[in-house]
Image 1 (tube, rainbow, N blue to C red):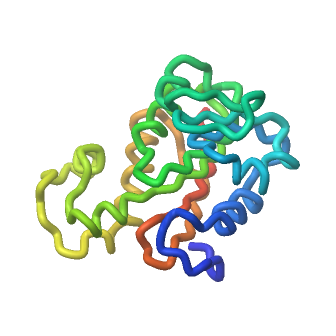
Image 2: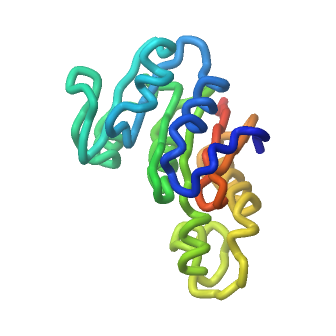
Length: 195
């Protein structure tokens, strides 16, 4: 975990923390696909001056019609090649694993960076239940009650990365995270490669 990046936020509104992670780990000449681009906060803070190319996608609102596409993210990823990007920004408040799996299934070999906002710990705190996807990967009964399950979130995340490698051949070289102060939303940077 990155130390000293706390912004005293307990939701997904810590724009400074998210931007700092992107600045620290953005590869040179990045070709960015920003899913859930919304109002363009990360574009303005990081990508406008540092990315070689940029495409934003959001189903609700986009910040610039020339740079963004107003469409459902899953539809966009399904219809377009993922090989023209090497950075994928999945800043979803929920759990964007299904979308990440779709990207990695379609993407050809190479090196990529993924920024992933994961609200799974919040879901675990509120419901105490795993979602269908995590239950399948972890091979746990979906409705199994484990008090304090969210405390094991980082370990669950690691098993999902191993599942990605087993299914699609994407090996994680580096996984760094920071979290909001409530530990309900985690901000991940994944550096991955596939040969």
